[in-house]
Amino acid sequence: MGQLVRDRRAGLVAIAALVLACQQSPQEEPALVKAAPPASPIVEEAPAPAKVENPGDDHEAPAIKVLAPPRALLEREGGKVTARYEVTDASELGALTVNGEAIAGAKRGAGEAEVTVAHGLNLLTVEARDVHGNEGRAVQAIYGAKRFQPTTAGASATIPGAVHLWLGEQVLDGGEGGRDVATVAEHLMKKFGRTALVGMQFPFANAGVSGTATITAVDPGRADVTLGVKDGGLAVRAALRDLKISLRLAAEILKVDTTIDATVSARELAIGATLAIDLPAGGAPRVRTRDVAVTLAGLSVDAGRLGSAVTWLAERFEAQVKAELTRRLEREAARAVDGPLASALAGLAITRDVEVPGHHGARGVTLSIRSALESLKFVPARGAHPGGIEATLAASATSRPEGGRSIQGAIVRGDCRSDGARSRPGAMGPVELGVSLDLANQLLAALWQAGALDVSLDLSAELGAELSAYRLETLTVDARFSLPPTLDDCSGALELQVGDVALTLTTKIADTPTEISLYLSAAAPVRALAEAGAIALEVGEPRLFAVDVTAAKVGGAPASTAKIAFFQGALALARRRLFDTLRGTLTRYPLPSLDLSGLASDLPVDARLTPELRAVTTHGGRLQLGGRIR
Image 1 (cartoon, helix red, strand yellow):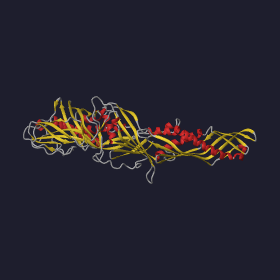
Image 2 (cartoon, one colour):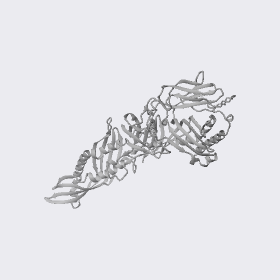
Image 3 (spheres, rainbow, N blue to C red):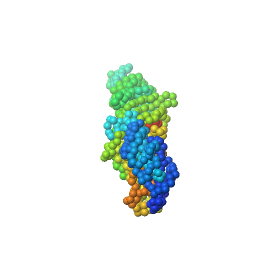
Image 4 (tube, rainbow, N blue to C red):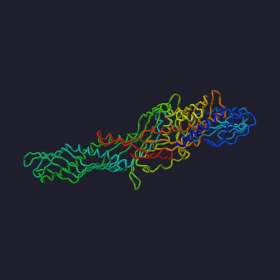
């Protein structure tokens, strides 16, 4: 907040200076002097050199017009662009540069030069200085990439490997009382115990006692499920402990028919199985239950008046129940487990239309989010390295273009620098989500394409009395992005780049309407934050802040060079607010969740496991987020 206050005051001081400049005579106006940029595709502002003494009456800077290429150009990285320009001035030129390279025989009129396009934001900068030291500059943006990703719906918009998801073993089985898959499975196991055995019948005969035993009720006792990752799937061990099974015996004892109620107690009913999971090429996940094994331990029978005469029933019961349960599990697994679990894994892929509300005068738009599983890998724990499930997804974020707004697409990072090693899975938490910058930029470009980033900022109410103190009645900024913002880490650090943002600043100075139109290009470091469980962008102080003024009027008349220079100070008031409007753009991407509710309709626990992201880092072309399940 302190920095924001300082920015505001700096802007107000500049505006106050403009008020004074408006009252000066032409002879008192200082000339606008700017530094020549270094020979680089990205131009960084430098301190202004000392002004050259002007012996004549020419105080106006050379007027420069770039004739080609057009503004907001997207060009192949490494390609050549011919810059054509025209310089007009009342005096002869002393120097002329294009992107810092001196043009021999500097002269007024038309000229051209060839520039090479680098990756990301490039600034085509033409600067001229006349013999009196007055300097003029024209700046416009070019985005360079080896490939541009479409931002309208279609197969070509899909980005392979756009999302990486890690679900560690803690998500599968986090221990007692955890929010995990095992907790959901324990509720399913208890339900299974109550229903799977009821109605089961088997014959018995021993020592003159014969008949049929029917299971009439089951008290499942305590359920415990453990899940582990193995190559090709999951190892499951489910147990019911201290269960009681009620039997009704329709028996013939010494040729006399009778009915006897008995209770079988078991210390444990355990079921072991393997869930083999694979992802056929271009298909949906497939789950198959295999290697089912059932054990019963610690059996005892209470048959009332028959007492110890039917203790042999325990052995008969164990063999029958184990055989029947194995048959039922193998038969019912596809319906009860395999299908719903496959659907839950398929649900990690998102197909959703997201409504983005308008803000600061921007349009509300609809984003189409689409993703599909590309791979599923089951990684067993090894030593200190935790086990888990790795998934990669192809994804896209697209929108419908707002009238006339369409470009080749979003910047694709490509191989501008080595991806390096991604952080070891599990290092950031039991849940990790990696989002490629290509997908983040496609989302930003889709928002831009739909007109969701163009804003009107009215700073009048916010600054209030401070404006009045300088006789400024209002201050509004209208911003229209000519190119989508883009995230880039090809320089080694993550930054936000914006090119050719068309700004119109409007105010009244001492009751005189004043307006300036300009194009702003900037590059600023960005810190990605986990905010409310999603990704937010915190934009720092720009390392590059280039302005190209196209029109300026004070009271309806063209403003002089000096007035334009002072009026640009008002940008300090608007710049941070402009970047702040981009803070929440990436929060529009929904997080994948593992929805297990399809396993049963009456689960007493929340069966949707959604990541809660708490940390963000950048690893070669990816935003890597870590957290846990909430």
